[in-house]
Length: 491
Ligand code: NDP
Image 1 (cartoon, rainbow, N blue to C red):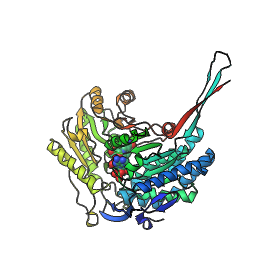
Image 2: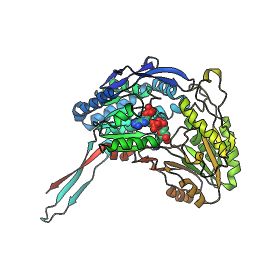
Image 3: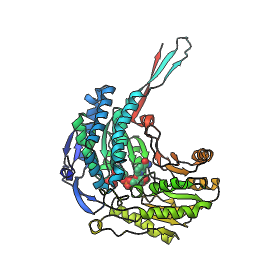
Image 4: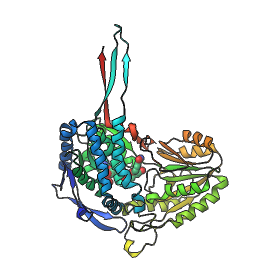
């Protein structure tokens, strides 16, 4: 299917593309141009019901009985099916988000496909525990654990890395034998729909993968999280949305796994390799137009190298090329929507009101006429904000960062930890003792040293504090996607 033919995006329920009974539709907008590129069916309660019921039925059918090796094989075929249609996925993702193909063809699409293979392999190879228990009669008892699928998993995903973050959940869910109902962000419906086609192509049984489109509160997202047929909810998105979903899940004690917001620090020590620190921080602050949960919005630099760092990051930010997704020279696309641009620009204004020095950016760029209707903003760097300024405390999720000097390692750690969030940190130092010491003390789920976004999918991923609940990745994903059952046999 080409994106062209996908312009009308329907739900994918029980292996078929179906429209909404209500006839309700919403527009899909290309954020680079502001132009409409599709219409999307909006799910109401009946479509959510149908999707959850299809997922429940599939658990009882061929999928539920399928041997693990066969299931793992199918997931490998699914990954290969995505790769075979790489260009379609790439175009779909770039049109939905405006992100440059340079980024999406290295990150979004290949990692989206890899998520199916890695989890199929993990599930095939992970052992469970066993214990021999002494008993008074001297015969003992043998305990062993079985991993069972949890059931129907609701997957609620955001717009910043749509395919990657959705498959990061669907991959392990299916590998563990669950079925899913996915609610992508209404901003980015294309790749979830395209994946439905690949599911059918490779022979994933009907009802295993279902997609409903729509909005969050009082719409498809909320109907799904409140549905009694759902056994677990995995969500990536804003912390406030996580709180709303947690409340919805509480009524039926539905299990949750949350990857939420961040306000991530970078710590740049005087003993860093400055070239590496600048290159890495340019990516961590501005990649995907700053719309990466792991991105850096607070940069703390040792005072002796502060001026040089600020100058060089400014030069780097000013050389980033904003443009169309399919121009190979484009480094940065637009924000996801005009609504999000309004939010980011409100922080640009607030930073100045709160006393920031604008090192570069701070406004909207002049774009060529074809892109003038897009949600563009300038990459922006501030200095001189107080530690309690809103741009230091709140997640902005745009291409912007603040740089502040520090004088000691202790001060740097205290500043890094002075936040409600705890997702990721980047530490730049060539002193390995310092790297270990600081990494251990920053309150975050991930500490990168002399790197950023370097992800081994076997490792735990998730946030501390208000950045999430639970860990995904490798064997850690099994915690949420399976129920462990202990079998105790008296010998
Ligand atoms: P949102 O929280 O706005 O939305 C995420 C998803 O939840 C969307 O599909 C949304 O639907 C849906 N939703 C919204 N309200 C409800 C509700 N009450 N019940 C059920 N579903 C609901 O996040 P964004 O899409 O704006 O994504 C950006 C956020 O995601 C940032 O905060 C970022 O830090 C975080 N994020 C975290 C990551 C991590 O790993 N920790 C990774 C990537 C992003 P709709 O869009 O239709 O409103």
